[in-house]
Length: 447
Length: 132
Image (cartoon, rainbow over all chains, first blue to last red; front, side, top):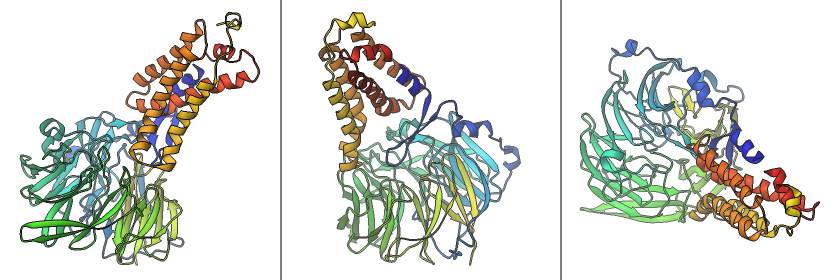
């Protein structure tokens, strides 16, 4: 009874990526409770008549950027963080959630949990001040993966498309947060809430908002008319994925890919017609990371769970109406679970569970592996300089050279407090970071 | 339960309890090292502790040679708080009770009996009295 008494005094705050539990005393306020105690209500009326927001080059309109690849081009920063470390512009509390940011102009869009409401929220890039919130009843909470929405809002044509952890899809006015349409993929399409909650960020292509459903047998994905919200099509057989629909142009044809437990499926974004699929079934398991596009015909897919962990390079080609997707190699050198990698200079840089690795794209061979300092972090690539910015699972921020010569960390700073699995964002010379308890903006010295 | 009530009975058969606790520890830690993030790892991690608890209850009730009210009270003191916590304080994180709290309580339960056993021939029964 004494043992149970002790257990009753503890609060379980989820697991680390390596399954170590996060435990705290119950009488110490949780980060969520501290956040809720200080939430400042936005002045919605002040924002209601704002002009339509439009995206410009350099914006970060969706999960992992415009191409969903976490690659930043056309910028050059001072990599000497020892002399010129990133300067904190602002930092503030945020509600729980694994969402990253979409940033358009001076607006930041993200998702967070606020008590029993899943919220899409909009903040100012300059100050971090909240501009509007959209609330929808729902609270996804799970012992291992924690509380809150997981996916990142998508900006397209003045609208925000967001998916909650329980399958609620909302289209909002990006300037005000007003709901334009909404759908529930669980109720309307028999979607199955995945074990860790819906984590897939909607994708808008050719006037269609494509969302993960997980209903299997032709209902893995759904396409909604992006303006009206009417169902346009369903496609695919996925039932367990945390990956997001991924736009790609392969062999000259624009298509949408979904990585899931069945493998990879490709559909025509306008009609939902299945173009090709690569069966790599891992029953009962899942895939989380985005496909990484290597070039106009090749891509990488993989997972860090299940019986066939690792990364596979596929060569996709089209001959008249027939598509083929042939494996070039399969490698266990990178077993990425929920930590995406980046492609640069003939190599793939990313996470082999909690170790950062470099893998040769030609053959899948491991080039090097670091000591695991970054844990289950997330990475950005500044491609002009070949620099990697890694937001580690412990909230520290590192800058490294992307080179096959070995792990070359240049500097590291403490950036966030607490477990950090959220993807970092680069926008306008600044880094925007968050985790389930705080969000921050750091300014980088540009060259 | 008093010592007088239990001293008549023979010493508790402890080794199955230690064996069960060892199996739970193996289920929790070995697959994680040998076959990480596979179905074997997840099943052993999530199913090992509750199965261990079930085996521990069977051991205590039928194989441990415990007599008297403690035979029934100890399982009640182990299981009922687990259910109560899972339904109240750990609602929505009840999995934490299963995969972390149950092994913790099993370790305290069997560990206490083992430690007491070094000092007392009737070892575990008096230990249970204190523990409960």
